[in-house]
Length: 337
Image 1: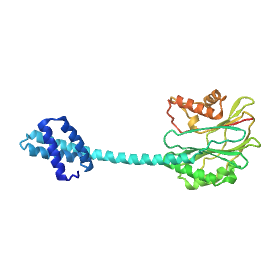
Image 2: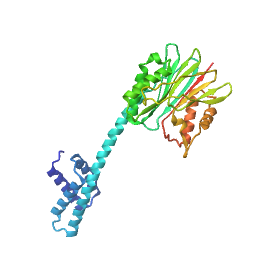
Image 3: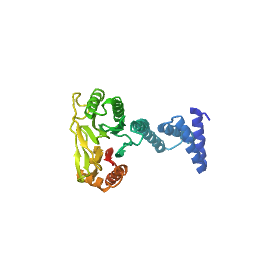
Image 4: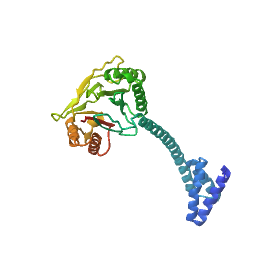
């Protein structure tokens, strides 16, 4: 039924009279259903109170003054409430729109990450990357060259949300456009640095470590741009050392240069790359020490690299009551026979 202002008043009066005469619960249900009509016509709370008062004046023209005054009071209260309610609805609608945009951006982020498991001759590889919220500031990327060797990047975008997703897409396509430099980590970072410096807001920076594993020489050549140090495991003497690489974060200075480092991998040796979501994991108010991260890795070293990475993630998540405070990415490369 299409209601006009007049038949809305007539219908409401009929329902109200019926209830006042019978007190029927069925009429109360009818009144609840009628509120849908009021919502469709965008009838505000204060308009409903005004309508109710007008009909009561018609039904009971001799209402006591204090009852009349109570309607005046209720009307004023509803005017304030109505304004606050409409503001709340506007904010809620905006929040829903923003959440929808974030969902789209989060899905876009997922398309930027590698979709297939990577397989490299002579390497056991494990990767875990988990966002703390819908959007992640962590990024990783790998590409195999014509020789079967692999170039691997891990990055942390300082800045979250949609801007981080846009920055991530720019980094991915910039890396894909520089295939000839995948063998040269320092040159690749220098080119990425110029791209970030020219195209990203001054408030955003990117830390990154990029490495190239040569399957013939069994060498891991890498450079870093202000990124969290990883670990290198020497199987021969069962020891860990920090995998550090000095270099300015991407996007600060277009003239930044990056040094290359080389690690020879013997059978059983591991390269462990990570973001600060791993090393800045907290137990209560205290950060985990790097030695404690090493202990977690040691507990699962007998497992395949993927299981090892997943076990470390589960342990870190458990220590934080299963609520990540920061995005977490962990990549493990282990040389096999």
